[in-house]
Length: 111
Image 1 (tube, rainbow, N blue to C red):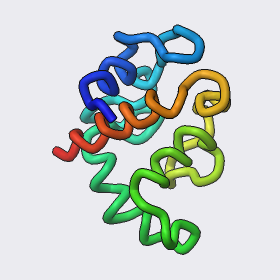
Image 2 (cartoon, rainbow, N blue to C red):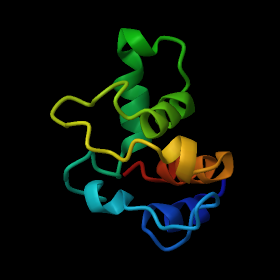
Image 3 (tube, rainbow, N blue to C red):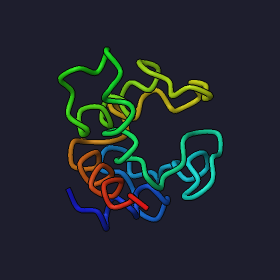
């Protein structure tokens, strides 16, 4: 994935491949402070150090977990958050390259 394009998608500065629309990620996922959804900074590290230790994610790679979280946001909710994420991102809005780019961007956010 391309982290630069992923950042543009995440911040609504680039259009998605399937629908040509911008994403509202940053509206709920603030970079450094918790918003409606988990914060952006440290996402990948939290996945590795916390989420993948949950029994239901045994055998998942960090990328698989992040894709599942985006494509099927209701499968696992981070404690303290509700399932208010767009439900059709993985089926109607993002293609595989968009997902790979967003995941590559999230990997860079380990502060």
